[in-house]
View (cartoon, rainbow, N blue to C red):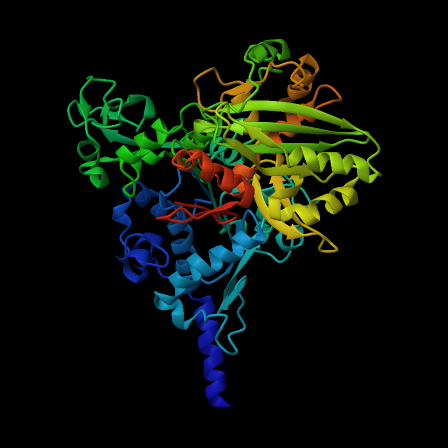
Length: 606
């Protein structure tokens, strides 16, 4: 009994005791060990490997700092800051903590792949038991320890965001959060409200790479902060400046990369600019008086984990691709992408592309796909040929009129999708894959059509709205298991197709249209192809119809989807003979004499 009393007294004293004055940086350098499961560089953790993080670690530890916002490029050690802060508090100043990831699945992954290995390789492995241990009381999404716990939730789960009081919150990749968590409002606001009980000692760590200007959450948080930028001195004139992409110079092949000082005009290599960075680099705050709300902006040029040559190569590979450009601006430069809301593409200009006439598959084309849109009284089909750089040729646009409740129109659709197309020399191809919209009033009829034809890579698709939704969101069985239904990110898909329609001749993704009589590419088609525009409404970027008929645009989008399902790479297809391309279009699998190429949902192996 006395021993139990002594234990209770010790526990009470531990709780009442002031936390040791050990900064997060000191704790990480002393206790963290990195292994191959969670880091590229293994061994004892050293914050000085990322000198730009030193001040941030120090500021979080200080009592007056309430919020720290990191608007940074990918792979700059943002996650390590979150991990080290969580573990330091769990060890020395235990309290309830919450980590919010964009989705529940991402929250689970962060717990299993980042937090748990860090716990296992630190002093906390005796304090926070693994979920697999008997009587641990822990789960993947909830880890208990004396004096507190760590909860992992997705921003898409309002009930989990509005539960018990929390002292410290960690909001990761906030631009990928839904704008509203269910009907409860902003996930960021919901999470912040949970810290009101601890208002005088709470810590908010908010991180992310920005997305679209005007709707970026991380940019908003940064704009309300002290707005710090990382400055380094010129090796020659010693004047301070930031790493700016506009000052990077290189040869046409991407070699001889250097950055020019805007003050003295001298150019230096990455190694020369970063020499002594840990001692000479410093953060300069635009609003230093905002001591409770600190914000830091940094692009990928500062990274010690990626060299400038690889960044330049990524830039050179963009080749006019709007989505690649957007990704580069967001994830490498850590800047928001400014959408150009220029209005509708001009259908009268696009119709001029029908000056080309071709009765055969163009010689540069390698594969055929189709997009199918189901209306109440007709079916629209767009057959496209594709070449290198996703250059496309509209082969024919077909409208099938009829009663969709009768089998006859579906039989006609089957004949269209099973048709053979010929090159001028007699070589032929069949449609490799077709994607069919399952929305509307004839969903069951579409399921009935798709089900026995899935082996031909005829796919039923369903669009998902919202920002930051990838094109391919995977297959799921429909309710009665009739088909494997593919969920597609509509906004991302429309962004890509719209960018390609706007490309100029000889640019990547340029779209040709067959001007031969009867192929369907008339002015009415181009009006429906340009029937949607991108607008910003209530801080959301959305595609909006400006005329009723938009099936031309939908079909063009659906014909693009197979590239994101089967990961068809034109650069691989160009290596094949016409006979091999035909076999591939029929079977989806090709076995040449020396090597096997399989194109399926797992990708292309060459």
